[in-house]
Image 1: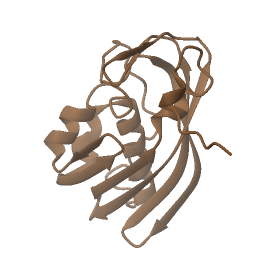
Image 2: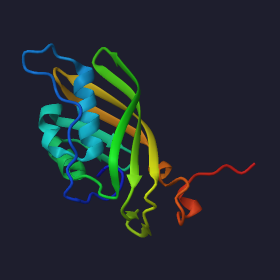
Image 3: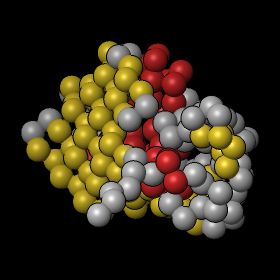
Length: 172
């Protein structure tokens, strides 16, 4: 989960659940998109070259990079504070050269996380969720732009010991 918190490696590499189509199969941007979403969220850089162009522009709440090498460096290792990570796709639409999805990450908070390089949050062992949305723009069979929207403080909602200033609130 390099895109959520600081990248760290636990040694437990997740299994892929969104295989790419065979060379002989009809090209399906939605399948490529789902594989890219999974690879980015799980921090699996080994799949990035088959999914993204060399000049990919990637942006998320904590990161803007403009090359495949930069994406691999920034997101190339999984976050180890979450385990049993799953991605639930709530909606998926393809329009011309774009694929747009609304998704939800579901995981268990089982190891401590260092938030914003200064706040250590101890694990609860309980489930956490993170809603998000992503947009991918394609050039031929690979993604040339990937925009990823989420609020990582949603993962910390209800976690004991999390300071209230980490979450936006509206006073009436």
